Image 1: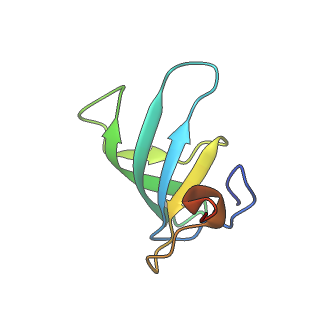
Image 2: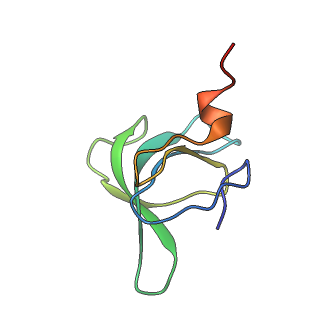
Length: 79
């Protein structure tokens, strides 16, 4: 799976996953279920304070890779 900018999503990546049809968003760390489905440990969301595990949605953005690097589309260009 890749994010909306084509960055591969890997276990341990910190991602933003948002639904375009509603105002739901979640931030969290990716892991993969035994079935291979990308899931996330939710750190912050605007829909539930109790749901701490969720599927990674199709509209997502890798904010920080597991190795600590930041994808170019997040970091932007230095001037």
